[in-house]
Amino acid sequence: MTTQLNNDQTLPQHVAVVMDGNGRWAKKRFLPRTAGHKAGVRATRRLVELCAIKGIGALTLFAFSSENWSRPDQEVSSLMSLFVSTLNSEINKLHEQGVRICFIGDRARFSENLQASIAAAEEKTAANTRLRLNIAANYGGRWDIVNAVRSLSRKLAAGDISGEQVTEQAFTRELCLADQPEPDLFIRTGGEQRISNFLLWQIAYTELFFTDTLWPEFNDAAFDEALDWYATRQRRFGKTGDQVGDVQGRQAG
Image 1 (cartoon, rainbow, N blue to C red):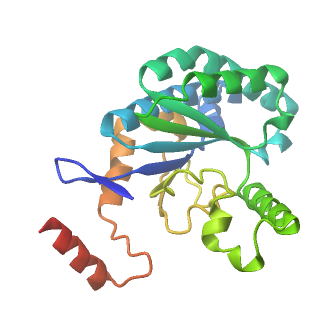
Image 2 (cartoon, rainbow, N blue to C red; image 1 turned 135 degrees about the vertical axis):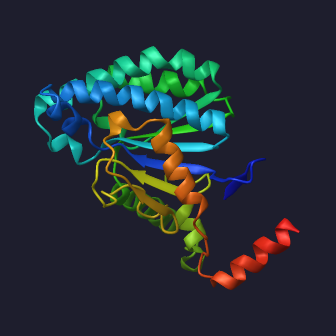
């Protein structure tokens, strides 16, 4: 799903981002990795503002993957502390901007303090509609799929559904982000060109944009570059280019 602006630039309705390169940004400056993560918060803040300003409906950020627990204990501890402090310091401003915050992922491993902050942020912003900010924390695409399988298995065992009712649509309804359009644009910063277990089911038809820009340096111009690239893409969803072109021509007329 896309949104057409008055300037005829086609914008994605849902953007998903892997925010990579904080550690390398800090290393280049002979700073601790934690400095890179703090610098990354500023880039995140600005991206949220830009999405709200441009009328993008949803932004999903890969904040902490289920694999990130394998990082050094000190870095994980610093990330958790930064997570709590950032959430508490940003929540009021996000609420004023009309941003609804939603967390996806397994919260059970987080501290009680962090879990309480997450719940408070979601409750405070629940009625906001300007931008849906999804924060993937302790999230993995495979974890998401396994959870969906378990949920459908329970319904099958209880007799609530039949085997014939296990369809792609039924499966999708059990996943995180099931109540939102699937991402139109995936952005990964930092030069790596892989998905890294992020929204594996949901990005089946998403346009993938990779940039060498390190996350703390991802600014207005870098986002515009990704959006300009997206605007050149012809989204076919299995159709031919001629079919899509005909439909777009009729809609424009």
